[in-house]
Amino acid sequence: MKINKFYQKAIGFALISIMASCNLDEEIFTEILSSEFGKSNEEVNAMVGAAYSSYGGWIGGPWVAQEISSDIGIVPTRGTDWAENGQWARLHEHDFQPDDFYAGGAWNTLYTGINNVNRIIYQLEGTGTEAALQTIKELKVLRALNYYYLMDIYGNVPLVTSFADADENPATNSRSEIFSFVVSEVEGVINDLPTTVGGSSYGKINKWTAHALLAKVYLNAEVFNGSAEWAKAIQNADVIIDSGNYNLTSNFFDNFSIDNESSSENIFVLVYDKVFSGGMNLAVRSLHYSSQQTYNFTTQPWNGFSSMEAFYNSFDPTDVRLGSFVEGPQYDSSGAVLLDNQAEPSDPNGPPIDFTPQIRDVRDALRQDGVRIGKFELEMGGNPAAMSNDFPLFRLGDIILTKAEAELRLGNAGTALILVNMIRERAGVTPFTSLTLADLLSERGRETAFEAYRRQDQIRFGTFNDAWEFKPADPSTHINIFPVSRSNMEANPSLTQNPGY
Image (cartoon, rainbow, N blue to C red; front, side, top):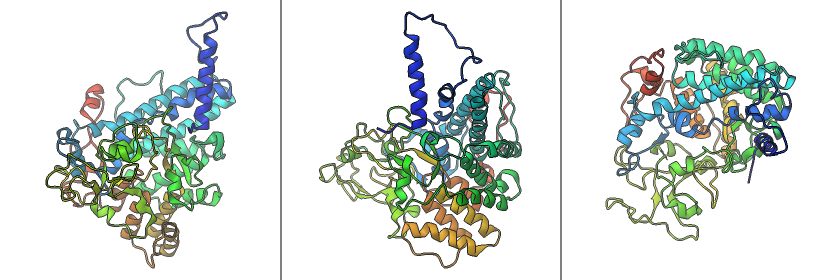
């Protein structure tokens, strides 16, 4: 079983502390003052664990907002399953409602992380040790990362950086203010961040993570702040590429394997472990109920998340990235044909399960409709609701395409073409001979499918409001940011709802 080294240290130190407190011969205190805790590296690691492990809601929050609202992911209603009062269908149709779950999903996940960071910074500031002060710099980047996603998904959000004296009902800040904060926070500490890659630094903020974050912020600057910053996106991407610390893996799927901490390409990941750090549950959300028999899963999947048909069909038959899908006839672990005895009479496949690209309707699909998400390695005998695959937020493949896009937008088509063909060569498909923005958006989709980029990419390329299957063209661009949930508005009367909601 894989346990991330950083978390192993934090967990181990916490366990030692608990065991020590059980010694009846020692004097027991009811609390440890912040000024007395966090002076050693081990104590600091124990404190910051909560900041790095606050992404248990990533898939149900930010991931859903980015992928299921886009033209590549869909959660069709199958009978009564996934109906949920039409919420999943409305997410696909861009009929976003403040009462629907997705309005608060990303917000709650990301602000939980921010609150944890603010609390830990407050505690570390009280120690004043070198280890504590260094860790504060890393935590500032982690907090900025959360705000990057918040300004992307919601636009205008409250900016909270204090803990003990935080405003109970903070007012909404503009997206431009959040943009300036993120850039200032990261650039203010970037040269003091560690440069070590892997080992005990795995899953923690380093200098290269900070440059990746800035590259993405500047790539989307025109959307976030009204002014394009292509050259700055290139500058930050180049620092990562030229560092020599990361390389494209020869096997694309090494980046998404169960033990993907050995990937030479992943820059920053959310660390998951089937025992110690849950929340990575793409498989249970996507695969068919009977897929439990294919992989001998300990938990039955829910038969939900699927790929859009047009997106699946956009892959060349020779593209190795077609392995991102579970498609075709399905079998149990012994090789016998897998059956669904509750298959609808109208299903042309009958009981034998066959994942086909076609989805009849977002509000009335068949149980077998749609190819499923298989980009992250599935563990035989594992729990699909608690996968051990770490989720890459930043990896070199995306950074190369980030640089390519910025170069193309600046008129450097030759440079952009070389970079994109590096990605296509690894995928085993014919190189492009020329490159358009439409080509680049399509290639980004194939390369970064289901990695929580697509909605952001579509907005930047101007296609998010287009019509696609089961969704008409959007009547207004107000849906380019999500509403603030009604529950969050009621909890904080100082919040301002986004326009159009």
